[in-house]
Every structure is written in structure tokens, then in C-alpha cells.
Amino acid sequence: MTDQSAPDREEEFAIFNHLESEVRSYARSFPVVFARARGAQLFARDGTAYLDFLMGCSSLNYGHNPPELKAALADYIAGDGITHGLDLYNEAKESFLREFHETILRPRQLDYVVQFPGPTGANAVEAALKLARKITGRPNIIAFTNGFHGVSLGALSCTGNRYHRAAAGQLLGGVTRLPYDGYLGSSVDTADYLDRLLSDPSSGVDAPAAVIVETVQGEGGLNVGGTEWLRKVAAIARKHGALLIVDDIQAGVGRTDAFFSFEAAGLRPDIVTMAKSISGYGLPMALVLIDRQLDKWEPGEHNGTFRGNCHAFVTARAAVEHFWRTDSLAASVRGKGNLLKSRLEQIAQKYDPERVSVKGRGMMRGIDLKSGEVAGQVISNAFQMGLIVETAGPKDEVVKCLPPLVIGEAQLSRGLDILEDAIDSVMGSAVNTAA
Ligand SMILES: *Cc1c(COP(=O)(O)O)cnc(C)c1O
Image (cartoon, rainbow, N blue to C red; front, side):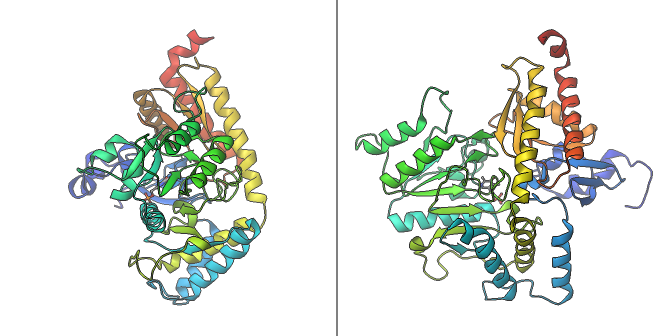
């Protein structure tokens, strides 16, 4: 559309309203047509700039169109590099595997083989579940309350969210749900409960093939698995002959500072799923990292036409090379994660802790407003003021900040200023009464 006059709203979204399925979701929170993006900013068609604290739900950890990755991709395309390669050997994949091995796996002494499933998180989870069941011969999987692992049937069985589960229209089986860390309050160690259930032959819980866990629950509302809890869950899985699958699709790739979110707890998962930011450029790509001893796949057992997205291999290689050969990105995430934490705590301190609290780890943190309605109003106000930020949690009650890891401190502060104003404008009356 070239018309510069402010178009009538209905008119502006006409084709989406007419032709795109009702299943669309994020677009409803941010009703504007976007045209360009760079770094931490999205630009609407009319040129309005928005700070982006959604970042493709953590698919764009290095920002929109990071220049180093864009250059690598543009060169590759200009040179007629292969775009689609099934799972044929090709140079783009070779370079990615070399870089990933040298820079990520080897220094961490992680002896994984790499599976390229179909290029989505859900597909990586499907592959991980299948493999765990195949290796152990056990059908049951342990997953946790508020876990989110994708919406294809296998992954959805592990996902907690009722709304998403209901859409399956069929029973979702093969999974036993257990309480995540803190689910029953700080006085109950839910890992002990897991151990008890698996140790008791009459608990009614079948020996599991795997325990699948997020170290920080992204969609579930920024619940943090404590270091001791995660270590205990890992030990319990091992003790009972179950594999440990860490779903690092949202919390990985530096979001909590280290490349893998489980490094802080010193875990060595048997299987790791990755997607979202692994390509670094928003291109579809997913990985399943499998302990070398556990690579029991037969050729083509888990298949998919788009396992060879060479453009994603190119940007993923460039991202690892540019951002992970040194510790500087992780260090800056630690610093900005602390900044994010202290600013959110300052905001929360203005209000009754029963109504506002801070959650999360690293640069995936947010503010729990205890009400989906309030949180929805906050993100809508924030959007009017130029900040894109979404909600998470069982009732969409947590405003979740996922700024790009490479954001400058000035932009980070500006986004948080907007968020603070948005919260104050919704909670306004409480400001005066709380003090
Ligand atoms: C987003 C997400 C998935 C699903 O990934 P898709 O690419 O949407 O299929 C799985 N697990 C976690 C932890 C996620 O955040």
C-alpha cells in the first residue's frame, strides 16, 4: 500500500481479516502492519518504530537482521549456494557442524551427535520422545506442570496448557504430569515426590522412558527450576533408568547467559532439543542433540523434507562464530539480566507483593500481575507507547520480557520505562494507596 494518509483500520487489515484463519494469535495483540526490522526495533508500514521485547518469542536473540549474519547469508545466496538439500552432505551443513563442534560442544566436553529434525521446536521434541521410547522400550514420559513443548500431538501430550491441549480433540496419552519446582510452594520439594513415585511399585506411575524439563518455563510463565532441584531431577531420572531431556528451545542460545541454559546447574542431559534462536536469524531450524551412546536411530526413522535448510545452517554457523567464540556475549547477558531484574523489582516494589512480583532468569524475566486481564491491559498500553511485549503463564498473567541479547542498555532502559508507565497506568490507583 503506497497511500500515506492514515488508512481506516478495517481497510488496513482487510486482507488478513478476509483471508487469514482465525487461528492467528500474536497479530491480535499488536494490530499494525509491520514492514521492516533492525536490531531491537520493528517498524510499521507508516514508519512508526516499536521496541521489540518479544523477539519472535526468543527466536531472534541476536536482534532483527544482525549484520554479520545477513552478510553471510547474502554472500551465500549470491554465490548460488544450495538452498534446499534434504539431508544430503553439503558445505553449509559441514561448516555449521564444524563450528558447532569446535565452539560449542568440544569446550563443554559434550559428546553429542546432532540430529536435524524438521525445522520446528515441536518436531525436535517429537524426535526426542520417539528416541527415548525406542531406547528404553518404555512408553511413559514424565513432564511437568506448566511445561510447554509444542503443539503437535506427541509434544502436546507433554504440554500442560489446557487451551492448547483441548485443540487436539483427542486423548493425549503416554505422559505422567508432575509438579514443577515450586508448584506446591517453597516448602515442598517436588523432586522428592518424583523419586517417591518412581520408587514405589504401587504408585501407579509406570517407569518412564524420559523426564522432559525446561530449566526456565517460557510459555508456562517464567517459572525457574532451581539448581538443586534440576540436579536432583537429573539424578532421579538416571537412578530409575529414564533419560533426561532438556527442552532448551526457548531458554537456550544465551537467553539465560551461557549457551545452554542447563550449564549453570552443571547438567549433562541425555538429549537436548533446540530451535527458536539456533539459526540466529529467525530462519526455521531445529536440533536434537543426542548422547553419542544413545544414538539408536536407524536411517530415516524420523524423517522430514525440510531437514536441510541451508540458509539456516549459514546463519547458525555465522552466529556461533561471531557470538560464541568468546565469553563476551554471555557476560553481557549476565549484566543486562541483572539490570532487567533490578528494574523489574523497582517497578514491583511500588505495589503490593500479592499483586505484583518478578520472575525469571537471565534475559527471560517478567512481571507477574496475577491477572490475565490486568496483564493484557498492560501490554496493550505498552504497545500504544511503542513497546511490543507479550504475556505468558497459565492465565496469561505474566508480562514476559525477551529483549534481544545484544540490546544496548539505553534501549533496554527505554523499554522498561515504557513498561513501567504501562503498568502504572493500569495499576495507577494502587500507586497512591500502596505507600
Ligand atoms: C516454542 C517452544 C517449543 C515449540 O517450538 P515450535 O517451533 O513452536 O514448534 C517447544 N518447547 C519450548 C520450550 C518452546 O518454548
